[in-house]
Image (tube, rainbow, N blue to C red; front, side, top):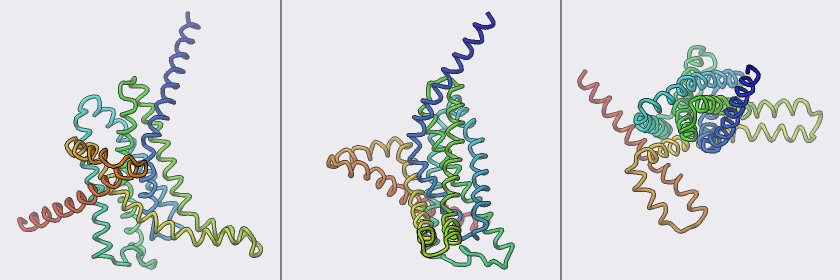
Length: 301
């Protein structure tokens, strides 16, 4: 009897693990788009910091991301079981926050750009520490919203499954996404260091020297590109969250997309363009509302 019970237990475990593998694969596919935006947004966070501080900052943000998911996974499971109606408004608030940050970045670039705020003086230790802490805090806030969307998307793929399967799938997705994103970010920010290393290892104008020189030239251009992409991603992700979680807006936009000519490129690009435009408008409206609220508060005080 004991042997039979053990075999039954092992069979149940194998079935659960098989379900987890299948569900995790489905969840990973559905969250791949957000993963790309997450990568772009986080890679830009180390721009302007000293080379020797890049990996420590990435590691600090990665630890913050793990803490975010340690909060989000049980919170998502609890909300979906007890208050499923709260998930949508919370996601919309998060989407508005992303759009708000994107709009603030644009306004700061256009009207309040100060080189010293982006590149603090090296001889000012307090300034450098404050600059890094601000970068880390901002990256962790952004990660929280993106992680929330990833967890909710993954939760949607395991809806109706056993609670054990849901917990295992969400936990696995949370760990894999965090390791994947910040592992890639770490590789991106150290491309120039790899270039310098290859140049040092080469004895002459050989292949290693040329590859190293190419990486050194390419790395800053890539970081500038990711900074732009990261800002655009804020509007794409934030606008997408707003569009997909406000039924009235989703039902209003969907027929417009379906009415366009049946071209593969148009069908693929238009939803992203619409999400970006919605995010852009929502971001600037939110900036205006926040500025007005601050002005009213200051007047009252």
